[in-house]
Length: 120
Image (cartoon, rainbow, N blue to C red; front, side, top):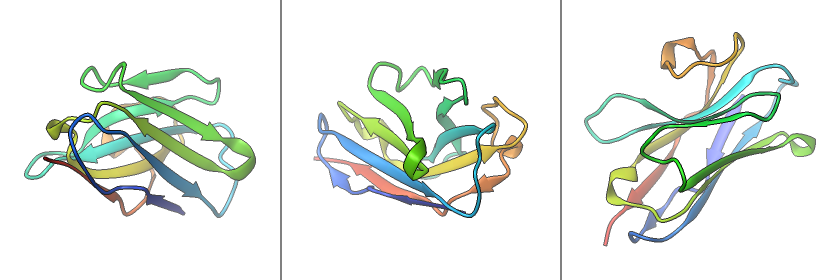
C-alpha cells in the first residue's frame, strides 16, 4: 500500500517535498517511481529509483527534482525545487516488480496521489 502527501498550492519558484509512505511489505528489489498527471493530459514519468541507488528523471524536471528513499522508515520522497506552472498535476508514487520502466502499465502498485498546483 502506498500513500502520498505533501502536495499543495505554491507560487512559481518555490519548493515542495512530497512523501510516499510504503506499507504492507518490504520492497527491497523493486523500482520506485514518481509519476504525475497534468490536467487533461496522460500520466507521465517524473523520476525513478533503482535498488542500487541509480536515479532517473524526465528531461522536464532534471536538475530541479530529486528522488530519494529512507529505507529504514520505508518512505519515498520527491524534492521539487524551482517549481513551474507546468509542474502542476496529481503526483503518484508507484512500484514496479519487474524493474526499471517509464511506462505506467509496467507498475504494479500505485498510491491515490497528492495534488500539486503551481500558480501565482
